[in-house]
Amino acid sequence: MPSGKRNFNHIKDKKIMIYHDAEERTDKAGFNIRDYTPVTNGKIWAHYRSTGGSEYFSAYMEGYIANAVFTINWREDIRPHMIVVFRKCIYKITHVDDLEGYKGDIKITCEMMSQAQGNFPGVIFD
Image 1 (cartoon, helix red, strand yellow):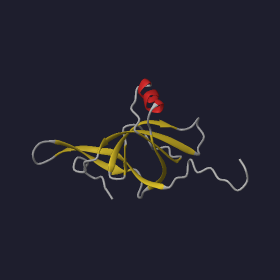
Image 2 (spheres, one colour):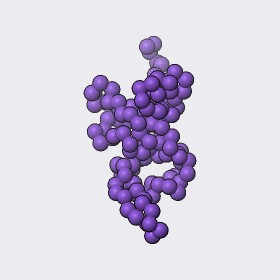
Image 3 (cartoon, rainbow, N blue to C red):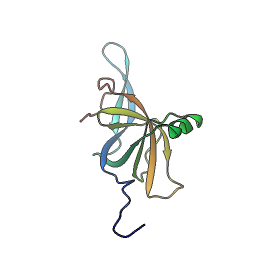
Image 4 (tube, rainbow, N blue to C red):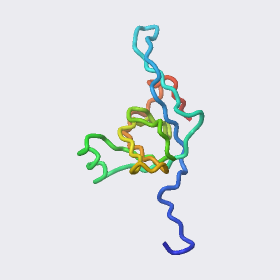
């Protein structure tokens, strides 16, 4: 790479929240509700990229749907089926790639679930 130029492809300039479902409870009307608990105390810096075209099709052929990819600093507590909140949208984690086991970054592939805010108790939208 020529001197003076930087690669801005993976700058973590977006903030996301990651939640796991803590427990299921029954509300006053008798419906089962799943409460969500944040994985961290604050937001996580991430690089965001929406998928499309061949990447979307490739993920589909491997058995999962990919609407967005987030790259974050390495963590060992991120698993599929957790949720990511970004720009008032909820994404379900479908695949976690630890990038060949190096403890630098992890790539989180997600499927958009909802833009509705009422169906996810415990989730903070801001």
